[in-house]
Image (cartoon, rainbow, N blue to C red; front, top):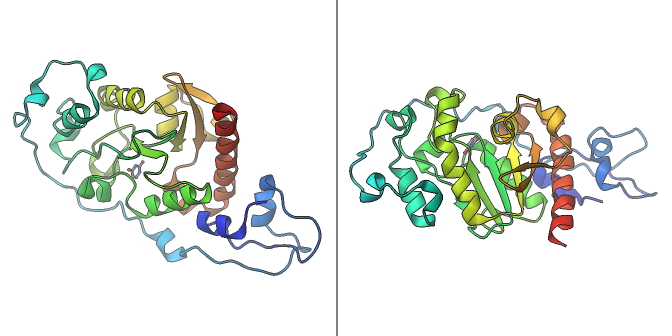
Length: 267
Ligand code: URA
């Protein structure tokens, strides 16, 4: 049974616990979310509903330019697939392969444990990430941190977080196909160096980009896919969950499925 504090960390509240009788099963989170009349007592409130309404990504666009000639690495001909971690990060930081370099403040390479078994992949940096240089630092990031806590993990502890796209698309528009294609070698190299056991794709864009499909999230969930030889599980983007609270129950089910899959892989 998921402990109330785990559900609270995930924002799956209010929940209701029986006074007596059998405990809830992990896969009955929906029941916990939509309490039956027989379920009473112990209401946990953990979600700041005001925060849910704030779109922190609607920030002014940053106009700054990067000196593409400032680093010898930016001019090196070494293929991305042969770079080590530091030179890869340096290469990304000077990248001018698409026009997103003209509007970014800085690149957002990724954060976490380079030996991580779990890799979470989002879409692209938003305004906060563009400013701070770290993925998922806004409200969506706080929810992602809660989701990680719910499965006994944390940013940097067995987890690496990155995005399909390393630069913020202006106005948070969807990345264009050419931008995805130009950025993909960086993600592929990150994967090759980290060698995670499991990828969690966060949201439609990450799922469709990694799996090269137009299929909906709903149709891709609850199955194990593959990207670059690594098992992939699809779940909702935390920013979407902030706007669609009932789907948090599905995200919780996805995380339970990911845990189960990981245990099978790791054993
Ligand atoms: N959304 C994403 O997909 N990635 C981030 O880093 C932030 C918000």
